[in-house]
Length: 248
Image (cartoon, rainbow, N blue to C red):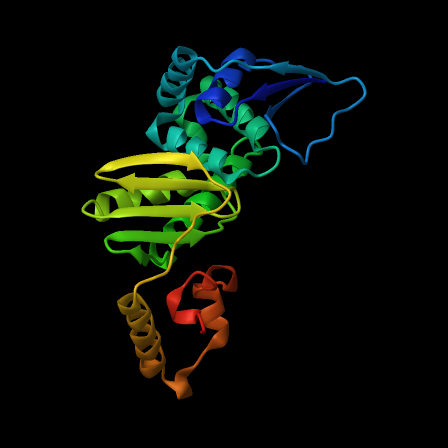
């Protein structure tokens, strides 16, 4: 099997897709540094050099064949990081290039369904985190938040908060992947970081957290408590970073 290794970026992935368009031979696409993949005895690995022009050509091709909906679905599916999703996306692109935008109505088709389901998972988690993410004031005017999502959705989540918290400086740390979104003086940057020193929170921040938890507790109606519904709406994996579920 010939394995095309890309640099982990969406542009790098689309460059690899451009090289493999219409190819039905035995191949695979993998992200560089992926530790869960095993190399077979007869596998040949080929590093793909990211080409921004080729990536743009692929985006235009996808847009013409699958429309904005298809391109958006591919981007969310790519962020899912589900094993084998790269090859699923390439199959979808090949299918769309042959049949046009009608492919988006063929959700049950084996060349569409894996991409559709992966995009639903990552987009859904990003939507939840827009409501679940909690910032603390690590220093006067400096806010930080932690998250550990199943999917690689830091970029869309950070862009959401950049448009809604544009007057503040903040950092969002994806602790699972060791990457951060840093928003300072209106500029958003993404950086590698194994950890983020939040510093000692201000007393008023601690007081605010206590008031928030007190409000959360006071608003609860014991007789109408529904732990099953609460777990469905706010899964436990998100609670450790949510102020109202913390205990000190």
